[in-house]
Amino acid sequence: MKVGLFIPCYVDQFYPQVAIASLQLLEKLGCEVEFPMKQTCCGQPMANSGYEHLTAGCNDNFVDNFAGFDYIVCPSGSCTLHVKDHLHSHKNEQAAVTIRKRIYELSEFLTDVLQVKGLQARFPHKVGFHQSCHGQRGLHMSQMSELVAEPFSKPEQLLNQVEGIELVALTRKDECCGFGGTFCVAEEAVSAKMGKDRVADHLKQEVEYIAGADMSCLMHMEGILRRQKSPVKVIHIAEILNSTLHEPTA
Image 1 (cartoon, rainbow, N blue to C red):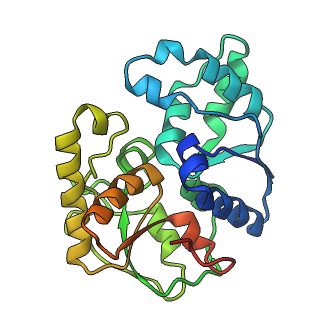
Image 2: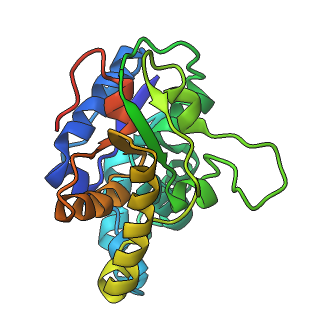
């Protein structure tokens, strides 16, 4: 299958190791992966700020870059959900509709499309997993704890296939970290307090790493950890699942 790799702009600029790990992991699992070189921001920051009517250029560029792929895969639940729910194109609306049906967040692509059952990965560390709100409540990557329903987690399904990993149980496993895109700018104090509470839950379990499927949430918590001078690191799930090829970057 031919996969277009969509890398969010902040990952490209600040966490390129996540993009590399995603590429290597998909190729390791047999995908033919292409990275369109002219891709840019999907327009989510503008839409979150109430300016979705100004995202036409981003939308048309996205369609130009990703039309024709069997699947589009992205290591970010929030960017994936934005494209899935909001991508339109005055130039080629039919292509936009097709893309919305073919875009997947990385871990849901591995579980739902590739149906990965036996990863050859090793990560002998104590890890707490943060389930981001977009992934959970928008893409349904895991069950919400307030529902009386059978629990599931697609990312944890993959992490449980990793040799040596110790996944800890958090007290509030699906609590928001407070990042929320532009929310952390508009409501800085609330965002910071929510982040500190989220980090504290992981620290209480004495984790070595906080893992997640969204580097935006992890970036928010990483800033808090650094200010607290904590030795705990953040890591994207792609880096763990790809850990047999390269050790994760600190």
